[in-house]
Image (cartoon, rainbow, N blue to C red; front, side, top):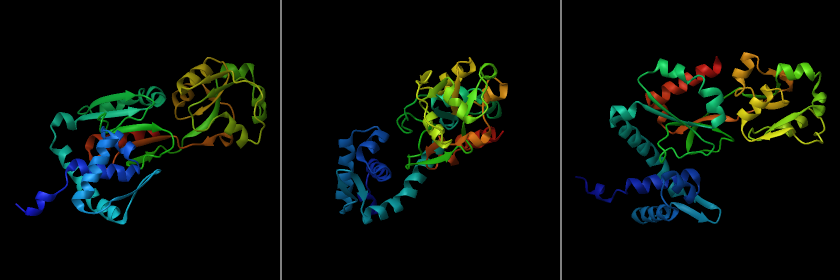
Length: 298
């Protein structure tokens, strides 16, 4: 055996190095790897001793790769990815066929759950596990293949495919509009408005976009869940400013309608398909990405 192999760093140290480089933060990398920050720092120090060079410049704001660190990351990144892919390929058939998805509850309840049977019918060879919560789970610790996340795409350590053409619109039930007609954007100031607190764009931004003054009255309701706002609007309580992506089935069934023209809607990039680098090559993930894109375009 080549004597150089006796001096190879441990996989644990290399994974810590890679994650810290991606996040620029030891604590965040430790959380992703399900270890303590002190353990992560120990692995970094051990790696630097073994290599005989400093890989990070450390400060109170975080860590930044040195030139040596940048070169090292560039060299080992493809090697670690190849190792991960080889390990996944050699895993047992049951593990390869289990697709684990995590998503925000509103997206899961309103969009994914009514459609997921189509994926199961098309790909019966995959065992599907779906979990929903508002916190972003760890792909490694929680064994997640792909996540549908809501928010700003600030997850640089992963691959991100943003769901395109999502729009925020003023919506209401036909019954509400029959009793309380809306003829122009300015009319909304006098209507019962329901505030959704979870979208990236909310009522204040909409009024500003229309160059209208902010309403000086209290919101009729405030909800931190989009599905509650949609249900309240469907029941005729008032107007909501919500994602047409999440409201798609309400709109198609006629339970809700767009109150104003598309010109008064605002584009938003709020939902993203997020997965570890290299996972798109796995059949279970590749098929899901292809399927969900077809459904979004339908």
